[in-house]
Amino acid sequence: MLTNGSFGFISYNSYDFLKYVLQSFIDDGILFRSAAWFHESLGKEKDHFHVWVEPVLKVDTESIRPKFIEILDDGQQQSIAIRPKCKSDWNNAYLYGVHNSDYLLYKGIEREQVNIKSDLHIYLGDFHVDIRQAEIWCFKNCLSPFKRLYSLVESGKTLEECYDILRTPFYQFHSVSVAYRSIQKDILKHAPFDLLEINDQKKGG
Image (tube, rainbow, N blue to C red; front, top):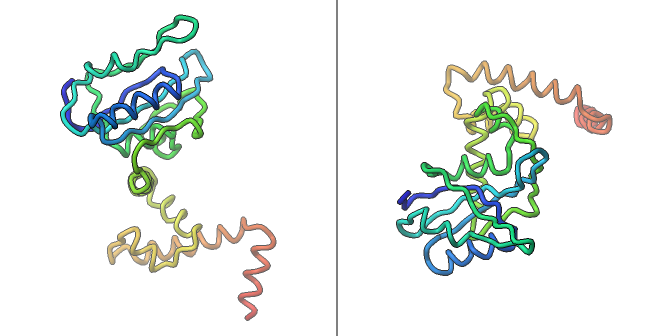
């Protein structure tokens, strides 16, 4: 596939080899940046990385495949698997790569029998803003309105801040307000003893 858009693929390479090849493509001006998430298989599948790359210019996905051929000490050959249509946007790639539970539920994806090893993830380039944007996208799109509101109340947001963050229309202000108070009571009801004691002290002045 010839593309100048971001795309993804599966890599069965070792961590060091994959990182080296991806960095080489970046150094050669073929890729702008790349990320990879390691999935350790707990079933019959092989351990693998979910890889996301962002090209600088138009890239033929088949032309990059040979660079990922890795010969192990025992003579086995590791490589990558590229689907014919492998275009991939960042939000979906990241949230699936880290197996975000809310995202998987939203997409109706059955969780693979894998262990996500974050210490083996690879980020070549600056992804700080992108990771935050993916988390915000998940919050807005993958959670039900009630779960979003619960999350905001739990994090200490005021009712007015919730109106703003949720972009609540005027005609829904009362409903959100009622739900907000109800969630506050639920959180306090299940709060640890010391938190309840602090809350009582505040009420007492």
